[in-house]
Length: 121
Image (cartoon, rainbow, N blue to C red; front, top):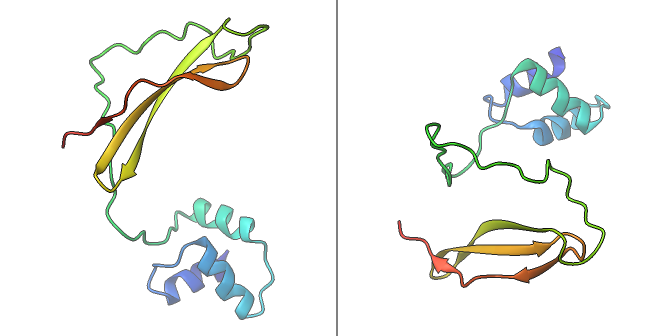
């Protein structure tokens, strides 16, 4: 652990687990990458991330959460027995597009996709 901290400190505290692991291998210290990652997490060390952090969702704690009507048991014995929905956002040349999907749990296929609409920022 002191070697991980030493490499991290020597590189201005910007190296993440991958770069610390590569540097340690260059210095002749053989260690698994997952071990470096686990130990860095335990020590509270992390690399610097480039770019700005984009926060897409801000939950409103005052609003009630929707009920989980299937108890997270996503299993079906036949088609059209259980449909679930999800939504995501996709970056396009025109801006962000939000897309909703309806999925048949038995077939694991999309059975419906309402029209996507652009985000209004």
